[in-house]
Image (cartoon, rainbow, N blue to C red; front, side, top):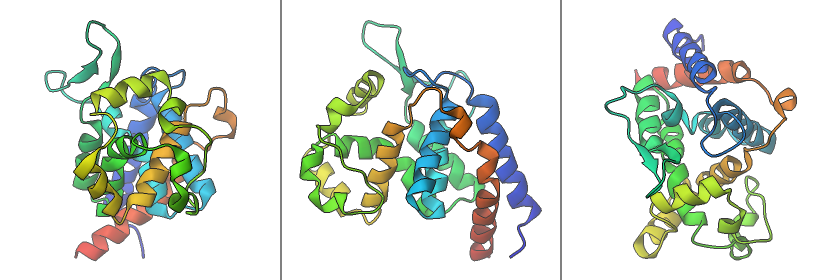
Length: 222
């Protein structure tokens, strides 16, 4: 399959946007938004994840990065504080943006899920995940998930509704993409290392993968 010029242009524009607009500090952390995304994608790639999951890991925070009109931008702020913990609804913003570019529904759903997945994993501790630890995407830990989150991530979780309970928990558990959603969440949480730029593949590494994905989706839609 020969990639179309449209697929190539969209992919190049997306990579350029990551590199240009992702230079700001990753909210509450000691690395940039770009480095956070690159680390998440690298973890996915090293795990042997399928291309759609690697792409979702790379672009999971694109809704935080792409410029929005200032009058439309709303960010979560702590009560009584000027501390910023992110763009409200960034997961949905990112999923809608990627859907408009022609990414698959799986990529868009994975991107849209990474806040919900934090609420799901936050409702349990890892020792209870016996059925999930067997999945090749997941890594195990020995302490409660909430305690493993960074301070900024704990604060954003509170604004995002806290851990799942009741019907929300049951619905998430039934999702066919659940295990990949959780894998993406864990890579997201682990992608906050300082000083690893030299061993983390750069954004253009994923250009051909994105072009092929968009070209395939465009062909399937015809």
